[in-house]
Length: 358
Ligand code: NCD
Image: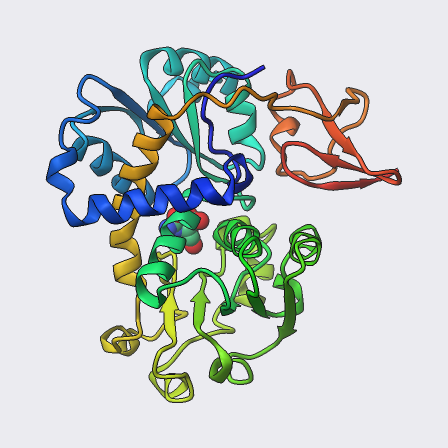
């Protein structure tokens, strides 16, 4: 049993709780100074095994603005990871130094693996190409403040839907609100993984798949542009074949509704022309700013709510079965129990959601 308020995936909290975190972020945004000593004496660790600007710094700024302190690394080669220390030992120790631990890691399922051995709350700041729940909280706050609602939306998601972890968490969250529709704009090679499509279907939301921005843009309330995730491709040639396929230009924006907004988790490479930045519908810099307030709210919510007493792994342990996802955390962190949800003819890895046909 676990006694911490980890945020590994959006479904660690209920929709009611997401709404409470967003409402708290809205309050903080109006008067951040009045929250200036709420985390006095508390320590947050930020362990970033992958590059980051916004997520890392907005978490750090959030903790400092709440009166707390920060420790951590943003380059594992400056830590004992470079000496070969496993994830378990690093987390076990750092989590005793801190009250809350924010981790970004290259491997899928690494946040759950960290939570299994942690002595404090773990926040998933991105686990490989899998999930990124705190970006989703940022996105929900942005949608609410820009469009006034989180339901009845037609949302276009464009670019790397396969490896884009922000897309995965956002779709999982928005499909929990009524009447949201998704327009998935990608090449077949970068399509949304089928396990996320199944989540959309199981929640009664709908989606269509198209190849171009042009055929979708006029119907959208929000267009979510994403970077092609170069670092996740198995070869440079594969990346070269997909890069630069999508670019949102000023010319394309003429076909969008006057009240449509453009979002992007950033960093942008070249999928949005710089000329679009001055369009009032370009919401991505406002979105990045919201990230700090939502993370202030999340830190307070995590520290102050009743611990969720629930098991982290609920599946069957099959230590002789190896997850087939080469990026799954169980490939390198070999001490982890191989836990799977049994769905009859398939086993679903409890760390990375890979489906294994029996
Ligand atoms: C995203 C990420 O790291 O997944 N960035 C972010 O957290 N704001 C998107 C990306 O890197 O393309």
